[in-house]
Every structure is written in structure tokens, then in C-alpha cells.
Length: 331
Ligand code: NAD
Image (cartoon, rainbow, N blue to C red; front, side, top):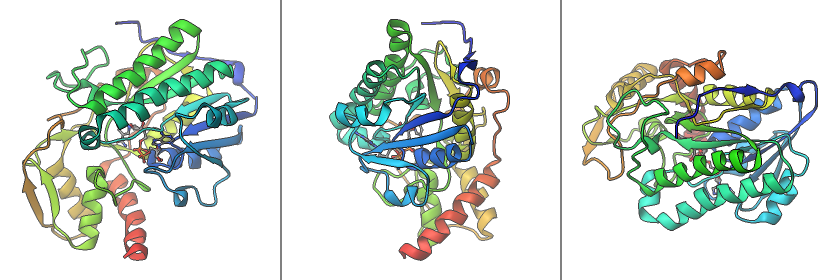
């Protein structure tokens, strides 16, 4: 389904006050995004829609945002949220490959049907621009590295399939209804406000909380598997720019910087940040996990020349600082 990766920045929003809706706004990336949007004088209204299934009210404390607590599967909730919006940033979803293996239908409903419900709300209310979050997991077992957007998706988990549906629905709405869409593929985003306290937590918050609590770090496999770890600040910078310039694209766009980091390297950096060595326990690899991941970031650079990567050390320092506060308060 190759289409030329041409970007459009629609200048018609220039100078206008903007209302932005963030689904999943009480989650990790969503709440960091709300913070970043609130810093832009052009953005005069922010509405978050979240059912708080994995997100938390704490993430939005003291922020200038209206939270509608409810599911994106409910059109009434979306009707109330999106009226008059300039853009919807659709992040609401059930993350995690293992969660989707345990309960594929639930992940499908939230991620695939949820995306369709959000796109329908955009269509009903003539919201011109929708940014959606897909995932590097859609590349799955395709062996080619780095992952260029034109590679054939070979998903190996229900989560990855539901994210492929997310981006495909967005592109179909662009084609059928003229909606301006920007489907991003995120790659292992990490940073402050990422939940560590549930069974499906991602690797960085799991490592950091274990390290801060004096527990061994649990590695699935031998730790040489690689990921393109992306600090959340890079992701939110790009999304803010995307809504301010109303950037859309005729195909998916990787949102990562082409750096391949093994779990063993993450542990070594964490040891450097904490100034001590950490105990590691190795277990069997997990079903559904891909072995290596690294983005080709040329399309991102073309669309967002100002996009910048935060070094792993800087990102881990910010993550550790935030989680240290949590570990001390939560105990
Ligand atoms: P998160 O779990 O912290 O945030 C998702 C938010 O969506 C949560 O606040 C949750 O309560 C909410 N939500 C879930 N189902 C909902 C529903 N039916 N109705 C309303 N709200 C609902 O996860 P995150 O890491 O912030 O992920 C944000 C988006 O980015 C997701 O779409 C995820 O699939 C995608 N993504 C994240 C990563 C990553 O590394 N964090 C990687 C690839 C893709």
C-alpha cells in the first residue's frame, strides 16, 4: 500500500485558538501530552477522555484540562468531548502484548473498535484532524532492520493486530471522508508517569521500580533483545507541533530515532544513573515479543525537522527522579 510520504502542514489554523481532545489523556503519554499542550498559548482548551482503566487522576492533577471519565466506545461521551475540536489525538487504548494474549477480545474492542468510534465522532462533528497512535509491534517478525514504514507488517500478537487496525482505519477515513490523519508508530516510549504498578507494565518502569525498591530486575530472555527506546518528551514535542501545524500524512510515520538499545544496555545505564550495580534475574522469553526493533526515522525527519532525541541517560535520569518520588510516597 505504498503512497508517497508527502506531508501536509495546513496553515489555515495559524493564529486561531485551538481546542484539542486527547483520548487516553490520563495515561502515561496522554498526561505528558496534556502538560506539553498546556504550555502552548495557541491551545485554549484541552479535553481528555479516559475510562481510567490504566490511567490515573493523579496524572492530571493541577493541569488546565477537562477530564471526561468514560469509554471511547461510548459515542455520547465522544459527542460531548469533540464538538468544536481542531484536532483529536487518539491515544486511548489497552497497551501491552501480554495483556492482549490473555484477553484478545478486550484489546480488540478498546483498540480497534475504539479507534473506529473515535473516527466516527470526528466525522459526525467535522473535526478536521486526527492523530492516532499505532505501534512498532506491527512490524512483528519481519526480519528487516531498521524498520521502514514500507516494510510488510507481520504482527505476532493480538495487540499488534489491533494497532494495525488503528492505523488502517485512520488511513481509510482519510481516503473515504477527506479526514486529515497522522498515524504514528511509537517505539517503546518511556519516561515519568508511566505506570509500573500493574502486571502488564513496560520494561523501563519495571526496571526502575525494581531497582529503587531493591528487588532484582527481571529480564525475559538473555537481555540482548533490542528496542528503539524513545523518551516521552520527544513524542509530545512532535505531537504538539503536529496539532499546531495540522500535519497530516498519506501513510504511517515511525515516531522514533533509529537507535537500537539492548535491555542489557538499559540496565548498564540505570546502574550509571543510580551509581550502583543491580541484581538481574533471567527468565524465558515471552510469547508475542519481537526480538529486535529499530525505526527508520527518515520520514519523521522529513515531516518534523525539529524533532529531537533525548539521550537514554537524560531520559532515565528524569524517569528515576519521578519514580523515586513515587516509591517514597507509595512505599
Ligand atoms: P497508558 O495505558 O498509560 O494510556 C492509555 C490510556 O487509555 C489510559 O489512561 C487508559 O485508562 C485509557 N483507556 C484505555 N481504554 C480506554 C477506553 N476504552 N476508553 C477511554 N480510555 C481508555 O499507555 P501509553 O503508554 O500512554 O499509550 C498511549 C498510546 O500509545 C496507546 O494507544 C498505545 O497503544 C500507544 N503506544 C504506546 C507505546 C509505549 O511504549 N508506551 C508504544 C506503542 C504504542
